[in-house]
Length: 67
Image (cartoon, rainbow, N blue to C red; front, side, top):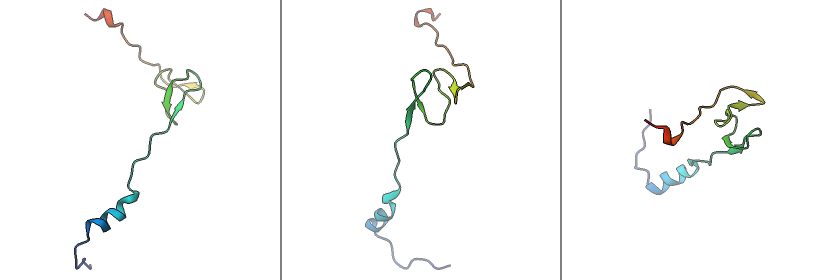
């Protein structure tokens, strides 16, 4: 298998890697409770996806009742 004869410069390496970048996460609004949620994911606030309840959301304990 052939090997490179000379070292690639850092500029050449950077030009190749220009397309390796992160894209922002697409966050939509839940149609039921209007909370922000990831696209194509179950809503963490109400537990619904595609008009159907998949999970029951966890309720937070009152902050004064911690003992």
